[in-house]
Length: 192
Image 1 (cartoon, one colour):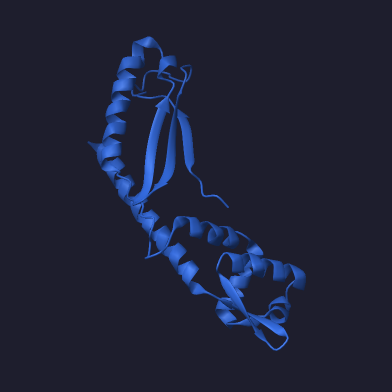
Image 2 (image 1 turned 60 degrees about the vertical axis):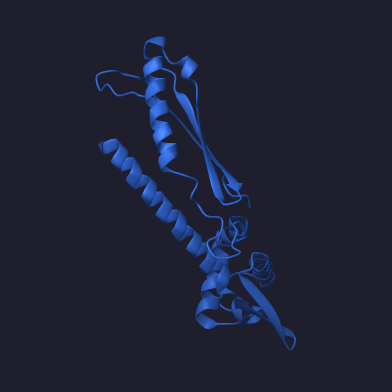
């Protein structure tokens, strides 16, 4: 699963006059792209479509947006770290999030958390999911680094590895803090 790298929206730039209906005017397209770089994630903001804005408003809208994006880019440096912990890379988190994005696999994580290492037979008991399906889900989770198995006689016993979940949670915490800081900067900018 590839992480998202693009967010875009359309809007009416510098539509500040409450007495004016801007809905008939063309919009501009604002695109945020993320790119991994050596020491973090680079954010690029591009806005296009100013040439379609009515000439009477174009210069003002462009100037106001240039100041806004200029301030925004100065105050929101590429600070999303690629290493939430030594050796942690966001690319490694994608399979973890993909594996956890399935209800059956989430239930398996809960069972393995609650009951410790379990065989496929035990994991299948009380479930409407077949043994083969459980095995396939466990292999997806194994490829993501969430579980590992060992042999106990003829049975495979599966055990949860907490480290990938802890790393993913830590990375989400960092992203959450960055969003909180960015929103605080935006609020400060809007209120000034």
